Amino acid sequence: MHITVVGTGYVGLVTGVGLATIGHRVTCLDIDKEKVTRLQSGEVPIYEPGLAELMREKMAQELLTFTTNAQEAYARGKVVFIAVGTPSNPDGSANLTYITQVCAEIGMYARQDMIVVTKSTVPVGTNDYIKETIERHLCSDVAISMASNPEFLREGSGVHDFFQGDRIVIGTADEPTAGVLEELFKPLEIPIFKTDIRSAEMIKYASNAFLATKISFINEISNICEKLHANIEDVAAGMGLDKRIGSQFLKAGIGYGGSCFPKDTDALVQIAGNVKHDFQLLKAVIEVNNKQQTSLVQKAKQLMDLSGKRIAMLGLAFKPNTDDMREAPSLVIADQLLTEGADVVAYDPQAKENAKLLLPHIQYVGSIDEAISEADAVFLVTEWDEIKQYPLEQYVELMRQPVIFDGRNCFELERVRQYALDYYSIGRVPVLRRQISV
Ligand SMILES: NC(=O)c1ccc[n+]([C@@H]2O[C@H](COP(=O)([O-])OP(=O)(O)OC[C@H]3O[C@@H](n4cnc5c(N)ncnc54)[C@H](O)[C@@H]3O)[C@@H](O)[C@H]2O)c1
Ligand SMILES: O=c1ccn([C@@H]2O[C@H](COP(=O)(O)OP(=O)(O)O[C@H]3O[C@H](CO)[C@@H](O)[C@H](O)[C@H]3O)[C@@H](O)[C@H]2O)c(=O)[nH]1
Image 1: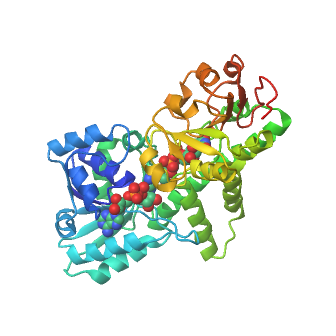
Image 2: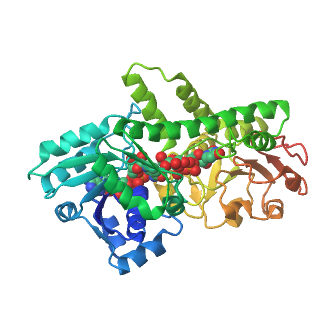
Image 3: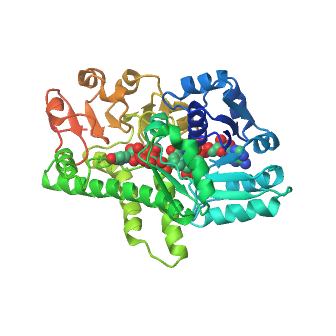
C-alpha cells in the first residue's frame, strides 16, 4: 500500500520506517528542508536506538523516501498519516497550527479518495475539525475518510514499541476505513481495538494522564517514606506484585518530563475545562510533579551552601536512551542550582547539543570522570546505563567531597554503604559516611 507520513519527528519517522518494514511503500513528508536532506542521505536526526539501521535498509529497498514536496507526497498516498507536533499554547491547550497547515495542504493536493489518519495527539473533537478543514480546501472532487490512530510509543524504545505495542487503537465511523487500516497493520500481529473517533482521541489523553498519575502517586508516597524511614523501592515492589496495580510506572524520582506527559496532562485539564469539568485529580498530579522536580535541590540546600560550589549533573535528557530535552527535569534542576550560585558542570551521553540550546549557562564536558572531578556534589538526573554502571569508587577518588544526590535511585543502598560516600536518594534513608561540614 502507498502511504504518506506527514512529519518526520520521533513519531513520524518511527512510523514511516516501521510501515516500510512491514512491506508498505512509504513517503515521508516534512517542511524542514535540513532535516529532509539529512534523512535523504541516510542520517537520522534524532537519537532513537535501532532506527538508523532499519531506515537505511528500507531506503535501499526503495520502500522509504523522504521529501519536502507536499504536492508529490499527497498525490502518492492512498492513506495519509498525520504525525506533526501539537505543542502547548501558553494556557496549556493544544496548539493546532501545524495540523491546520497540513489540512490546507491535503485539501489543495489530494487527487484521489483518501484515508486521513491522525496519529498526532489532538483534543477530543479535532478529527471533525480536520475533516472539515481539508474539505474546505479541496480542489478536486475526492472523498476524505477520517480515522484516529493515537500513538503510544515511548522515546528511547520507539522501534521496539512500534513492533511490540500492547494495542493499536483505530477510531473511525467508517467500517471500510477500519478494514483498510486493520489490513495495513495486520503484519504486526498486535491486538487492534476499534472504537469511534472521539473515544480514540480520549484514549490517548486518558492513558498518558493515568501513567502520570501513577508517577505522581508514587512520588508522594516516596516523600512520606522519607519522613517515616521506609524504603520506596520495596514499597513499590510490594505494591506492584498486585496484578491490579502492576509494577510499571511506579519508579519514584524527580518527576516526569518529556514532550508528552506535561503537555498532554495540561491539555486534558483544558479539554475538561472546556466542558465545564474541573479535573481536580489531574491538577493535583501536575502540581505534585512540579514540586517533585525541585525536591532534590531543596534537599541539597538543607545540607550545604551551594553558592560557589562545583556541582556535577549527570544526565540531562528527560529519560535515558533519548536526546530529547523537552520538559526535562534537568532544566528545572540546573536553573535552581544556578540561582543558588553554583558552578554547574554537566554530562549526558546524547543530549548535550539539544541541552546547550536550552541551558547555555552551564559547562558541558565529554565524560563522567571530567564532570565529577573536584566536584563538591553530584546530582544524578537521568538513569543512563553508563551512569548506573559507573564505579562508585570513582566518586570517592575524583570528587572534592563525595556527596551524591540521586534523583533516580540508581544504586542499591547496600552497595552504596560499602563506599565512603554521602548518598541522598528518593524515598529512602540517606547513607551517611560522616557529617557534612561545608
Ligand atoms: N514524541 C513522542 O514520544 C510521542 C509519542 C506519542 C504521540 N506523540 C504525539 O505525536 C505528535 C508528533 O510528536 P513528535 O514528538 O514526533 O513531534 P516532533 O516535533 O519531533 O516532529 C514533528 C515534525 O512535523 C514537522 N511538520 C510540521 N508541520 C509540517 C507540515 N505542514 N508538513 C510536514 N511536516 C510538518 C516538523 O518539521 C517536525 O519535523 C504530537 O502530537 C505528539 O504529542 C509523540
Ligand atoms: O515509573 C516511572 C516511569 C517514568 N517516569 C518518568 O516519566 C517520563 C516519561 O517517561 P516514558 O513514559 O517512559 O517516556 P515518553 O517517551 O514520554 O512516553 C510517554 O509519552 C508518550 C507520548 O504521548 C506515549 O506515547 C507513551 O506511551 C508514554 O509512556 C520520564 O521523565 C520518566 O523519567 C518516572 O518518573 N517513573
